[in-house]
Amino acid sequence: MLVALIMGFACGLPLLLTMSVLQARMKEAAIDLTIIGLINLVQIPYTWKFIWAPLLDRFIPPMLGRRRGWLAIAQAALIISIAGLGLCDPASHFYLMVIMALLVAFFSATQDIVVDAYRREDLSDNELGLGSSLYIYGYRMGTLVASGGGLIIADYISWTIAYLVMSILMLPSLAATLLTLEPEIAEGSPKTLKEAVINPLVDYFQRKEAIWILAFILFYKIGDTMASAMTMPFYLEIGFSKTEIGTVVKIFGTWAIIGGALLGGLIMLKLGIRRSLWVFGFFQAISTACFALLSRIGHNLAALSGVIAFENISSGMGTAAFVAFMASITNRKFTATQYSLLTSIMAFPRVLTSAPTGYLVKQLGWESFFIACTLIAVPGMLLLIKIAPWRSWSVKTRFI
Image 1 (cartoon, one colour):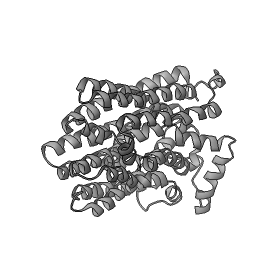
Image 2 (cartoon, one colour):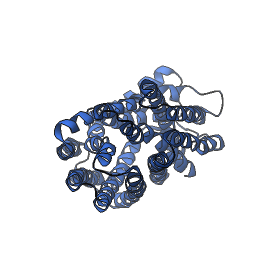
Image 3 (cartoon, one colour):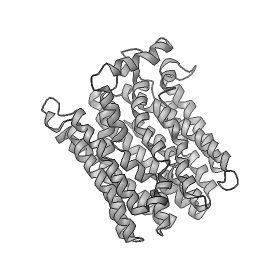
Image 4 (tube, helix red, strand yellow):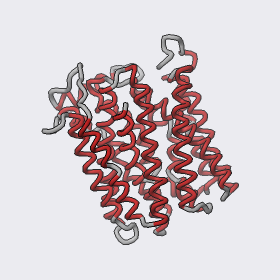
């Protein structure tokens, strides 16, 4: 459980360093909004990580074992690449900055593959719920430190120092990797590359609802994701300072997400995962619409705090149910490949549909943009009719 918490922190830390934190740095450097939106394309490794995930299932590094070995390699590379990204100025070294951001995203995605597989293999089915909650808790703490702490350090010292501090904060997770134990898998591991690549897909697509599940994972959080992709420029444009954003949006907001995740876990005990997906998805859509209201109100800390509290609690609940749902449908023998396939599809909207968001804001304006993001959430909710109909719940399916 402690490892799940620490590894959650390690996975959350790098993500926003190539998203909202990098967007804030680019905005301060007077980079065009369209380019700021397109920078989300550096997140592509998160959507394609299933391509090299079979290699992490099949091959074992010479030291530390299959999971710990790959994890140590990814984390060491992350420490170096995060520091390198901090040394690249967006105005004078733009293309080098893009390359370093891509490297951070690649090694971060690789770390995600191994951590997800480790957690699934190391915990029993009874422990998976609590382990996933602790992972999300650590993950949000990582995003809190990276975004909130990073913005505040940048405000008072410099962007370079902010990124260097973040790279140093990856060291405890590397130490945890070296000290923890390698999980033992009763089902064994793939013996050939063909078995590692083909068998996980065959195992998954034998399910009659396989395509519908993939479509649901793709669309469930798409509206929330598109809105989140441009919130940093939105806050800055309506007059909030970096310190206000770091304090209210990132620090206070992260605690709201953590509270939402814990609340979501309690609600799932009563409703089950599938009904919870309905309830939490509805709250996610409504919380996105609240940003349209904030665009009318403008610079107001009380309004910002209210919107952030509601949006992040809803997001925390939705994420808890989403992660639990994906973990529940993976095969332990092919954990890295199957889980990375699902999470890659989940990350797809964050990358490709987020890329044109800057252009959409320029064409629609902030209020209409957030209303559009709310309406885009509808297809994901409708897919629940197929994969998780409300009336299908019973005592036997209570926890799934």
